[in-house]
Structures are given as C-alpha cells and as structure tokens.
Image (cartoon, rainbow, N blue to C red; front, top):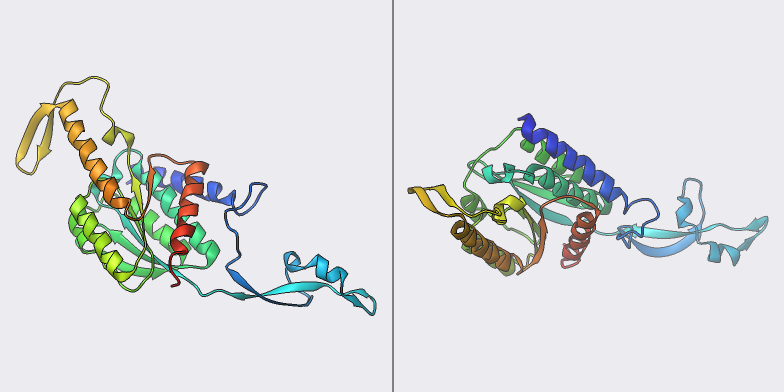
Length: 281
C-alpha cells in the first residue's frame, strides 16, 4: 500500500507547487480572467479588494474631500462542470504512473477550483465505474485515497466501454495505453454524438514503450498461455498499439505524461482552458 501512497503524495505536492506559479509570483499567469464578467463601476466600499480599484477612473472622479475611489464591479460567470474519468486498474500502478497520475489529477483539480468549476469524478476500476459530483479539492483527495489503497483491478476496456457520457460537460480521460483502440474510438463516437469535447491524458512509464538496448528472447503471459518471441518483435507490436491509441486520442485534445514538471503543468492547465472554452455548460 505504501509503495503506491508515497509516490502519489510526492506527485500531489509537486503539482501544488507547479500550479502555484500560475497563481502567484512573477511568471505570467495562464489564467486571463477571474471567472467573472465585467458589469459596471461604483464607488469603493470598505471590504472591496484593492485590486479592483480603477485608478484612471478614480483620477477623473473628484469628490468633496478629494478623489473618490472607483472600483470595477463584476458578476460571476455560470459555473461550469467537467467530467473527470481516472483509470485506476492494475496497469496504472506500474513504475512512475502513481506519481504522474496524482500530479495530473491535482493539476486538473487546482485549475477547476481556481475557476469555480464542479467535477464529475469517475473512477475506472473494480467491477463498475461510479460517478460522483464533487468540489475540486475532494476529487483530488478521492483519487489519492484510491491510489493509496493499491490496485483495485478491473478490465480497462470493459470499464471504458461502460463510461456514461450524459449532458454536455467536457470529458477528461486520464488513462494509460492499456486500452483497445476500438473501445476508445467508441467513447469518442458517443462523445461526438452528445456534443461533448474530450481531453485524453495518457500516463505511461517509458520502460513500457521503449525497448531495452539489448535484444533477446522473451516470454509474455497472455490469456492463452505463455508466448515466446524476440524482445524487438514484442516492442514492435507495442509501438503499433501505442500509435493506434494515440491516433484515436487525437480526435480530441491529447497530452502524454511520463514525468512531472512545470512544462507539463503549463500544458495541462492550458489544455483544460481550451477544453472548457469549447462548451457553454
């Protein structure tokens, strides 16, 4: 259990640190708005945020005892909802995946919290995928709790095929390459018919997709028994499978993650905003 919990917590802390760059500090923020829509100006009242003071208008607003402080008044935008589906079947617990997965989910939750969005969370694991409506911080902690409990099993293809796509909230899939391209294509077909934009984040460990430097004979256990062959041949099949999965995922927005860092954080947060902008829900 602790083998999965520790890297997940490391990914969680790294994501909080990386996303904070875009909330505070000297780096330009990727968040262009405040989740608010401009309405009008009014005179300053005690308790107003100093950042809302419009100094140019204040300079043109003389009062009886000096200048009147004028502030910009805003109206909150409609809260949007997103559907976050996270794979927690056995293959998602290999190598660096628990840390990267926690990193990705935390980034998504942070930007959703920043924008006041609600999150429909689906855990793809076990016998049946269940959907819960959560505020963003709870979505992160729910995934972390599931990660710390260890593998929960389940057939990735069956779980993905049973994923419910209802309404029009944009869909974010956080999965690995252990999926049938035809099943994934079915998800995109259902999303298109429902008018739902999709962002796919593929989490992987490079050892899964990169062959070792020395070729040799390998044995792989399959549903029909042990299969023997050259390592290069096996990885050739892996590369073809990976290419098919990525080709389907590119029907929407696609991000691949084999590690963590500010560059990935900026890409994920930027893709979230692009996905969110494609729907009015």
